[in-house]
Image 1: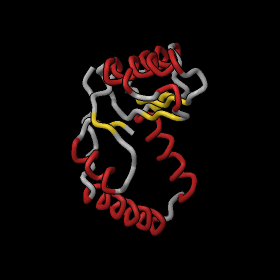
Image 2 (image 1 turned 90 degrees about the horizontal axis):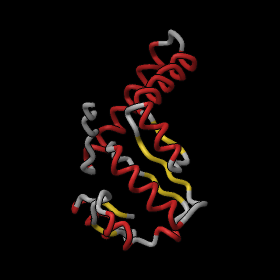
Image 3 (image 1 turned 90 degrees about the vertical axis):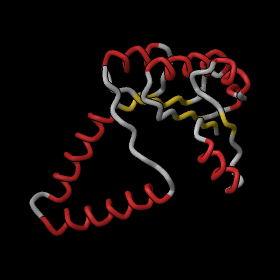
Length: 140
């Protein structure tokens, strides 16, 4: 695992998870990683150019790896697919699908939404406690 946040690296090392500190938009850093051996790569970086570079670097040495990235733009998602992304997550649409699923699952039952709310607040508190924050939506 690679990350650009030294606190994340410290926590991962404390949990004995192999990791390295580096910047995903640094081609030389990516060249130092054993990309030819990975089975699955997930980038939650919302930057198109960084994801494009990551996909190209992985595909150059590892065609069968699964590469999942984030995009906030349909045209950019199509370009990421064109260079070899296995799957591109578009959070806005994913959120809409999730909301539709909740409505289908719970209908007009306010008690079920109250339970979802409690569970979601617990999840958010946990994420906050371990130092996670939701990234700002990029402006394009």
